[in-house]
Image (tube, rainbow, N blue to C red; front, top):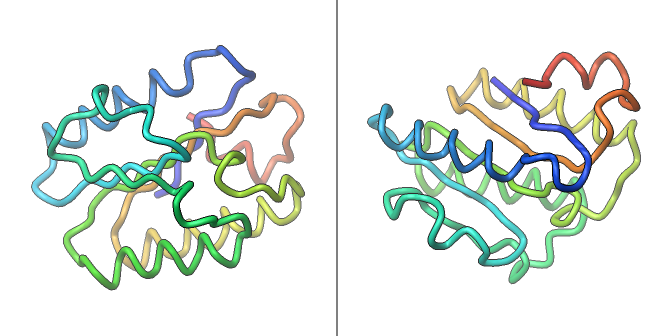
Length: 137
């Protein structure tokens, strides 16, 4: 399952994501991963969640993030949740079509591997296509 937290800057996306990370850590038996561009959430999320600073990997493209996610999973089959904060700071390509394709791939991957993904994106929710809106929580 893929869920999107969308909104403009300052709308509380990261705060909501942190709440969901805390809930996942408290309720799940599997591993929880949180990916962010820089280490800003170090003291906000529980220590049980694996915090990954994506800025040190220079991800940049959709192809790279797909490989990164597959690599995380192949290294740890116990992951039940992956949270990504500020997606467009990690992946610099803001092409709406590519984002939509990525979400479709991610949704298929999440069903196949039984992993829940929650992504925060700084975008006006009214400006995205219907195939993206279906993921918004």
